[in-house]
Length: 119
Image (cartoon, rainbow, N blue to C red; front, side, top):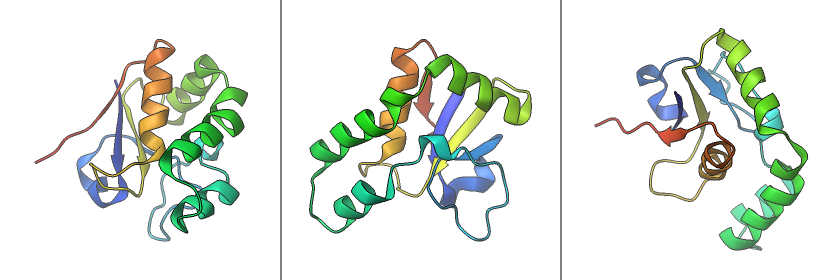
């Protein structure tokens, strides 16, 4: 199963893979920067210059539309030689984040992905 979560929950996840442009300095696991947002629109979103709707459009156009979900899954699978892994970024559950877009995209393309809820 493919899961998503955030770095603060690292100790609770299985086979973590960062999909952020820059992982925290203390994170030493695998990274898959092909799924990271482009710095330009990421910064514009964080600075309030664009909203989440425009961010979503840009993310899909500049990142997801240039990738093949089957190839991405194969790459991610080979990070651990496992079908079970967790895609990580920074935002806590309940906040808009690109990992939600990645989860939707993977699911729509035949690779079910869900947020790992840990209480």
